[in-house]
Length: 552
Ligand code: G16
Image (cartoon, rainbow, N blue to C red):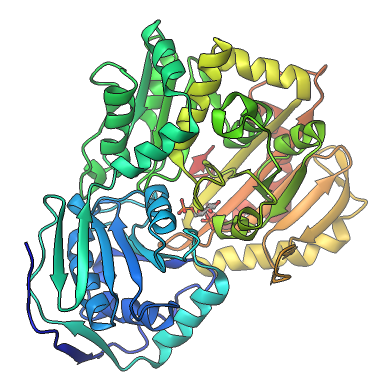
């Protein structure tokens, strides 16, 4: 079916006063409350700035999709009509407008699009009272670099109008071909291509036979974007029983939940694995499908350890059987992977927080795998972190080694030692309180060197900055680090992705050698650091919070 109407772009005046003045130019898009996005001209203004800034718009191909949250379909309708008004040749979107972030990255790459617009506020809650977001990915399939988002931001400050075509909405119910004026639109099944990619990377036969032999798994889609993907992958392709995927129906408000796969927000899954013996393996992904949490029976895998374990066992996976060229982790991620990289004699890079910093390293073939402590793991197969890819990677290793998650972790620690690790988040604290706390601690840093902290001596302190080894760009003010004599460290950062107040993140790490005590509870092992940073930065006193909002 085709909607043939004369293309009459109309220019609509923008009446909002500087709508994006509080946008953080460092993020690869815009994340705000749904209410804010519903204001007249708000979404349109931001899309206009993107379409004026993105290279290749005239006659280009654009991928558009989202995580299914409230506002997803309406936003796709607006973006398609604006894309037509800006002279795009072809737009690709998906049935129901559902497209996970890694699947979008894949589509952009293999359809040679100029980029993609992904409608998601990631792991933030959705619905009318939740959050909405617009992310922009470039032609390499990865999050747009800071230089691009800064240009978009500058453009939003001078916008006076936006261009849109007045046409009726196209249906996203079934795959099909449409057109608006001279722009063609393809609505495709957003799941198929992604599954084909996974089939090329992993040995599905091996995983299928391991599951068949009696290795019960469970996956929590958290009523978010991965529901359809996971059902097709685990239940249809890999033969796991029906019901393996929990909360598999994508809902506009994620069923009222917070689609962030951690022990607090994926509690239903955590209870199944940690407090019952029903399953050998459990996993969850976030709102847009790029994050993952891995659990074994009675055991939680912290994401820093997960990256180290995938690196150490990568040759098991067909796609990485020839070995890895290098790995990278974000600065606050524990150095568990560094030790493995050293053992494998491959490079290990330390980048600032945010997936976009891996882009140049991946594009220039300096790394194969990368990850962040915030439940993000990925490889050079796309340019985003990829939740279901990480789950398949784990299943492939377990199928090959025929062991449990807990056994694999123990074997890993007894070879490499254990990096006790935890992140404490203090959410929704007043912005001025957070900035005062951070600023005060930063001023104190130089004086701490040589002083006692948490029973050790402070070796170095700094505010992390990064020089990109490929293009020389500099990212400074990326987090305060206190590094102790025994290699333990505390990192303090302010989140760049929250939408309510400020979020203070405290990252704690302590290394225990392979012949040390590897069986402690993390919070116990990290206690001196936890007490030390609370006293030093006056966290409880200044925030009024007795304990962190989320501990992972
Ligand atoms: C948080 C995490 C980062 C992650 C970012 C975006 O940022 O700490 O590691 O890269 O979210 O994640 P997503 O793409 O899943 O939204 P911040 O600044 O809040 O710490």
